[in-house]
Image (tube, rainbow, N blue to C red; front, side):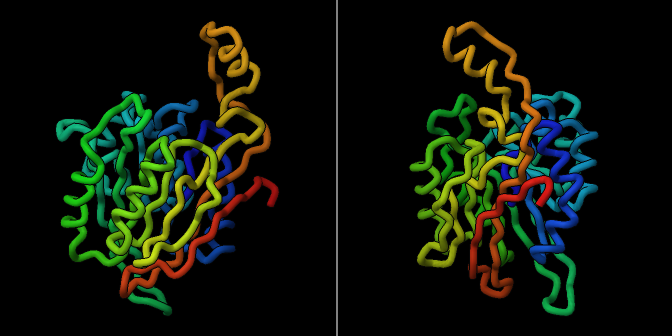
Length: 263
């Protein structure tokens, strides 16, 4: 899972280095939260195609899913590789979950993977349906799928821990996005679910969660609106790698990934 991709610096890391990372860490399937990929807010069809072309298998979105109107036709299409939060209104464009397949290799048969995106409620401007009631329905959709992945796009670590504990044993991994700051709590819960409150940000780290420092500080100091432009220096890729038993769907290992452009 690649953490929130922010602007051109973030997507450049993904596009330029994804092949190296995939080979180096022997990765079979990659989920990428890209809701901030277009200038820090939303995603466009061109950026989506470039990210998919770089080797990403599934793109997840969050509270900025609909920020770029040009992307709405993609969400309304039958493309199974992009999902928005499932607990948004039923009439909202796009799907909130998908089932994909990783092809067979010499070491394992073909594997179905269920991926869902869910929006938190605490401290979030965009309010979706209750996460627990919604995710129970997703568990039913994934009844015939062993490997299950949830991107929980939420602000509060406590709410993320609630979801992790609630879904322990029912999902292979529950990984958080949205705060752009990686947490050091990666673990495998008692019933086999890999969990981390937030996998971090892929973008410019000489910044304030991806934005230019001076303009954010000026806004905070004076309350005068400023332009929160995407920063440009020290681009890094944050993510989390989960090793899953494809027969049982249980996680065997979890590790954080912090990858600089020049690594």
